[in-house]
Image (cartoon, rainbow, N blue to C red):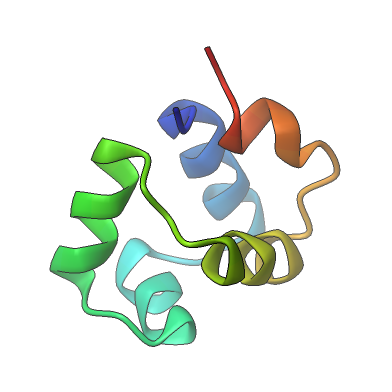
Length: 65
């Protein structure tokens, strides 16, 4: 399950909106929201978010309880 609070915090720190991140991932904003809420990002999208947002501890963000 995605820790949405940590993901949003990483986005704020990087100064990127959900719309911008979705565009960088090559998906629609709606798809981004749906995948974030369901925790079903594809591995390639997770890897790209880690790069874009410079996430140091991806396990705590993308494999949260």
